[in-house]
Amino acid sequence: MNSTIISVDLLQNPYEIVIASGGLEELGTRMADLKLGEKVLLASNPVIFRHYGERAIGALQQAGFAVNSCILPAGERYKTLNSIQKIYDAALENRLERSSTLVALGGGIIGDMTGFAAATWLRGINFVQVPTSLLAMVDAAIGGKTGVNHPQGKNLIGAFHQPRLVLIDPQVLQTLPAREFRAGMAEVIKYGVIWDGGLFKQLEQTPRLDQARYLSPELLQEILTRSCQAKAHIVSKDEKENDLRAILNYGHTIGHAIESLTGYRTLNHGEAVAIGMVAVGDLAVEMGLWDRDAANRQLALIHKAGLPTQIPPDLDPDAILAALQTDKKVKAGQVRFVLPTQIGAAIVADQVGSDQVRQVISRAQNPA
Image (cartoon, rainbow, N blue to C red; front, top):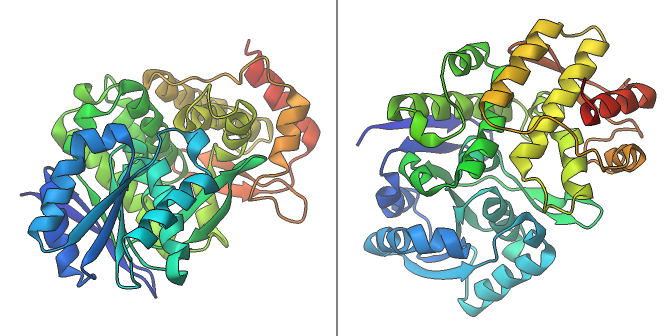
């Protein structure tokens, strides 16, 4: 079975990202190679578990693991401490030990919650990511960011806790709804803008980006590989987001504010990030950091991926500005924005005036 292995070269907790078509069948053997404890608790949501739960559990049992499962409700609005409590209850019921492992089988929400539970149960146990959405494969499953939402903001409660393994099986994308595939494509485009100009050009040359079925297996493998390489490289250089890693938040600052203000019901994460990238791209042009042609190229890619580009017109600009102040990346009271400087490069800036941000929000709500 052909597979791509990408190393996340951290000093203390290095691990591998394995991208392998049909790789779900290898989950047990790859975990056994890591010499993990016998007990495994697999967390998932009802839809993903129906598709892939039996296969994942079968692969684990065949490798000698004792497996139980914990099924959590699907949706960002359930990414709360109440859901974490359900994982804790299952961990206690199944007598998980410090050598035991939590396996996240699902998208970014399941991965974030399972990782946070693993970080905090018995002060930290093993954790394996098996992402089933494009967004989780290229972003959420890599880098050790775990957590849940607070009613006042996204991902405000969390911990850094690196997985022992990230196993990506592109075949599972066949059952991913088209809207969720498009959401993941927002993160892929992000990597092209902030880090990998070659990936950006490759996306420009691809006729359709809005559904997985329009991408050949080879192209999908290439997109996954380049995106994961970008994330792995950045995380390896800056695990705790002290400097370089902050550029991964491109589009996320305004995106998170929009998600929070719409109650996580109107837009999914990738859609909000796409809108955020358009708005912040406009801000970078306004500040003379980026040229309009590059911003238009980004806009064209986002349109090609079938993603929204406009801030919902019914959102109050003052509420958006207030929500920005609760963002995790605020430093000394200043909201920090990731601003592109060319296709494939970006900087982090905190000297952005609120009047400039307000104007950008207004234009993003009422584009000409």
